[in-house]
Image (cartoon, rainbow, N blue to C red; front, side, top):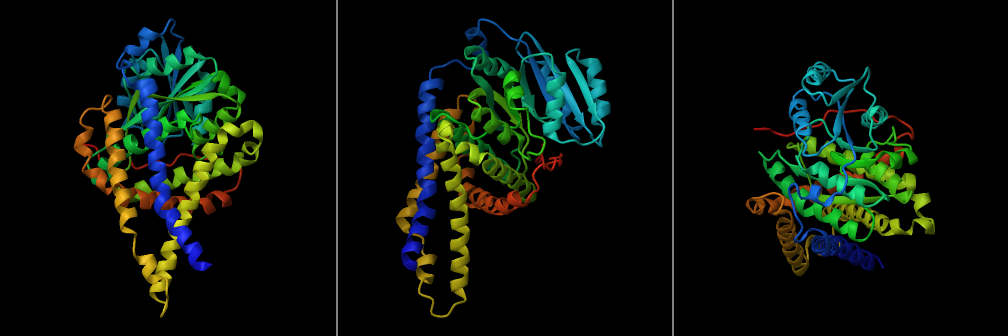
Length: 418
């Protein structure tokens, strides 16, 4: 009986990532064929729109003194006829407040909201939404650079359907000075991009991108905006919108250049926060999701639950293997220490195929991705390990975190910039 359970655990551990890789590749290719292949890029979205509703950009800021000039300048250069920029200074302790007041004099479209204390990103976004003049909001992090044509591509989704509540953009990593940075460039293409495309095919998206996403204000109002106690407000608001029947779309042309951690410590903190936020959202909304009315969310939930089980399966197998090394006469040591050759080879080849497929799809938006193909060979070793461990640690952290505790800002590692 024990050996049967062990065999089942090993099979699941080896073949779950293999199966999901093909699910993401098939879903990504179907999305590409249906919505991307042969379609225009650049400023092409404006030609598909009959009217241009005004837009409010929300830029929540906490200690962004080094990055705000670039971010606001990029927003001011948007290729879109009518927009305003609202920057929310959320209790910054650096020179962010002074810089925003200075930039407000330079850019007539910019308005600034100052919060005396650090209230957290969800609260800052709420304040920005309350201060905004328009129905459509595009939220950008204070260290991100939005592509000049991104607004048009986001807005064409809202003008095409009244049921679109949010549109997530396509983040592109610009910190790539180290091995971790180079791998993340490929990760956002081969993993994040493919997953969002595949999830759009089966109807529900796990999360909008926290760094670039558009929202319909009336949809946000219906779900009471961003939850103040959500440490990943992007995941939380995505589930709230979809549980109320709003559609979330992915727009690959809405490019946004972002800064990412390039140290193991910074990467661990970021991924642990993402993992904890996912667990909190899953447990918070699970009772509502179980109703038949929310059946379109079931596949998304099953995918997430299996990923949690997989992480704990890997941890359990490793601990069992470690225990057997110090147990005289243990009979399972050999079986645990030998990875099936055919499975490991197939998994490795599948990773390379996945990277090739994703680089081909995203090559129309970012040239030169093929140069990073070599670095992606390190992805399973570095990122699978970190993501698996953070998810295992995140479950108890999320379950023990007091409900209602406000989520405040913690300045992240923003990588090594040239």
